[in-house]
Length: 249
Image 1 (cartoon, rainbow, N blue to C red):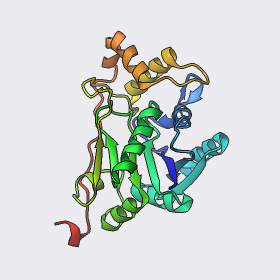
Image 2: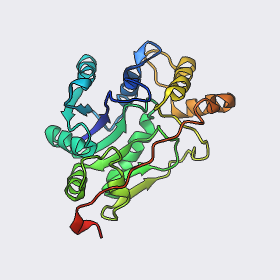
Image 3: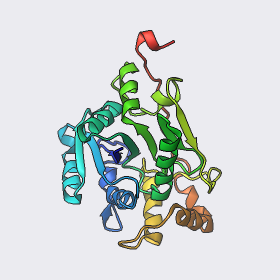
């Protein structure tokens, strides 16, 4: 069984331009995510999944510099891009994350992969760690099926095809450490998100070392005012999914 970590990334963001390549502590934000994914004991390959359009050339350059695999696929159909990347690299199980989440914790990531495989699920996700710190695990065969039933090339919110269709075996992992009530937003969409992320890294980051999600939680609990920095940022809501007519019922 081949397992890999896939990072979906584009440079089209309008709210915070080229955000995934913005520097934090002298390293692109995306680089910090890569550093953390490299500590996974389950994924020995990292694939940066971006688009074929010229706008995203710098992401391929980043991948080349970092020694990562880079797959360039459909600009808007993220689910198809992931499926095609899995086909190209012959990956059976994908641990998926997005480039605007630089605080992925490799321990929770690996725990989810084990849970997913042992439970023989089609799609699995963590349920009780802060927004922006979790990965999702999905089988290539499940992506094949989801691509067959969708009727849209707009699949930015591709997990909804698993969560809303009742056609897949879903895994929901509640980790031993429960952060579900923290109310933390630890993703980067807008400038306040990025400002908070810079503060976190400035205080916790040491070159060559990885700090844990628990370290982040402790730091923010000791500095509760920091949690308000991005508290007014609205998270984009998933759009309606579109299924082929004969499957919609």
